[in-house]
Image: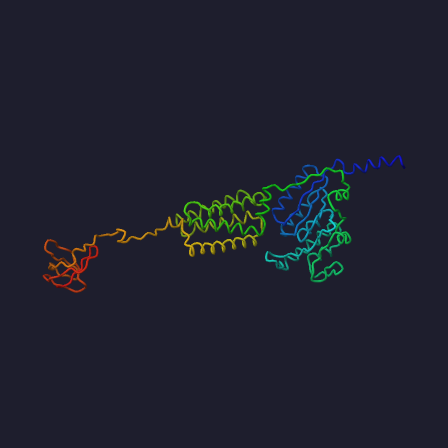
Amino acid sequence: MLAVLPFLGQYASGEGEGKLVSFIPVEQEVERGLEAFLKRSIQEAEDEGADHIVLEIDTPGGAVNAADNIATIIKSTEVPITAYVADRALSAGAYIALNADQIIMEPGALMGSAAIIDQSGNTAGKKAESFWHAAMKSAAELNDRDPKYALAMADPDVDLPNYNAPKGELLTLNGEEAVKVGYAEGMAENRTELLNLLNLKDAEVSDAEVSIAERIARFVTNPIIIPILLSIGSLGLVLELYSPGFGVPGFMGAGALLLFFFGHMIAGFAGWESLLLLIVGVVLIVVEIFIPGFGVFGVLGAVGVVASIVLASGQSMQYILLAVLIAVAVTVGGSYLFIKIFGYKGFFKKIILSDATNSDQGYVSNTTRDELVGLEGVAVTPLRPSGIADFGDERLDVVTEGGFLSAGTEVKIIKTNGSRVVVRAC
């Protein structure tokens, strides 16, 4: 036995040697940008020949559609995946963890509280809740876990008072509780303990890193950021029409829209076709300004811009249309504030005639002969009420104040206005 011990020690020290473990962070909110990052990272881990993938989870949750797509990506890979809950896996994060092959938690980490809510923080409706409860139950059953705990995380009507989740409260498990109910295969304080639990302590470790472009993509694909970017983009471009040259509003508007499309293209949701559709839409709107077409070009342009945003967003139709409506409301309100209250003027001033012609500025159609006022003469023709009168050296076309004067009547000029000479009988 003593002779065999050194060989056993040598074998133990080489546990996992020659194998590769890829650590992939699942941090911040769950959204479509995170989905794109995980898809790329898992694919790269497979291409590198990773023997095991560890998802280091620390998220408060996020979008259900992104979490569902991430779960599909996890289940489609043949490489074993461990969800390591380093701090919290709440809401959509709990769902992602349940779809992994096994779960390891830090002692103080939390998992659960997975009710589905809308953007306003309210319950998302019976249909959405039914789908989410079924998804949580299916994820638990995927690795033979008792589904009642998964349902208790999503449904406050499930009564689990022994785990601080009586009826009306959502279940949230710590590390010890998760191990006890079979939702975690163990606890680990750090990566070293984690690799020991996985029998991979001597394996090579690689870390997936979020690129700068992916950080931007994760930021701009956040459901909260999307309506903000669209609002800045549309308001900036509208105000630019009222600005001389191309100034700050134009740069802000164009920058916000380009950031929106760039982020969604990096995330893999938008293609060049959506950007091309945006450009065509903007061109049609500009054409409508310079070549009025009874609104046809303007309507087609607006439809093109909205369609490009919908195609690029990667979000549900209901959500992205809501974001567009928010942007329209902000643009209308902001434009009114700047144009009506602050008198913001610019581009439209160049294409709309606002100058007025008046005599003070020298704009006259005929010279007014003020020196004629007071002259006396004789009507050469009957004045009915207009006619001709003789004023010594000059005959003039005149008009009475409204009455009839016969030829030969002596008249006097009382007023002149341009070519109009007004007379009355002396």
